[in-house]
Amino acid sequence: MEFEKKLNELKKDLDKATNLKYKAEAKLEQLNNQEKELVEELNKLNIKPEDLETEIESLKLEIEKLFNEANELLPKDILD
Image (tube, rainbow, N blue to C red; front, side, top):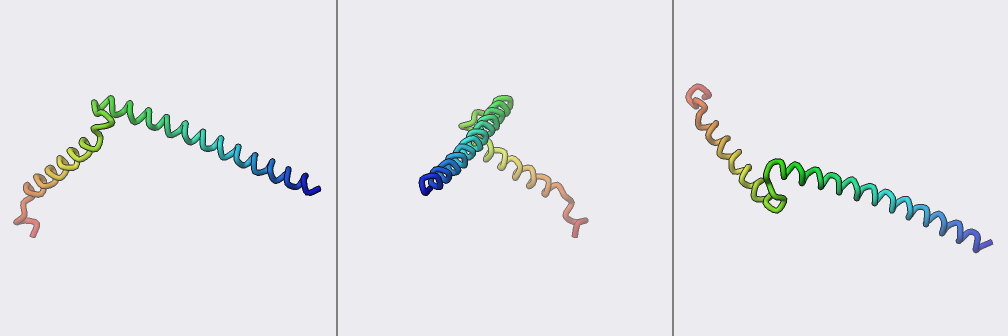
């Protein structure tokens, strides 16, 4: 009788592991699809994935520059 109990526990654990495996495979496929979409989007923008960090920093600097320019153009005398 002890063997039957152990066998049932083993089957239950195997089923759980199988379900986890399927979930992990589905998640991996989803992540691979997202990666493919992101790479395609970067290609449309003529940005190589390895240049992405540099491009982000460049855009941050450009945004900061534009904020500063906009701030300088505001008439300070009427805002006080």
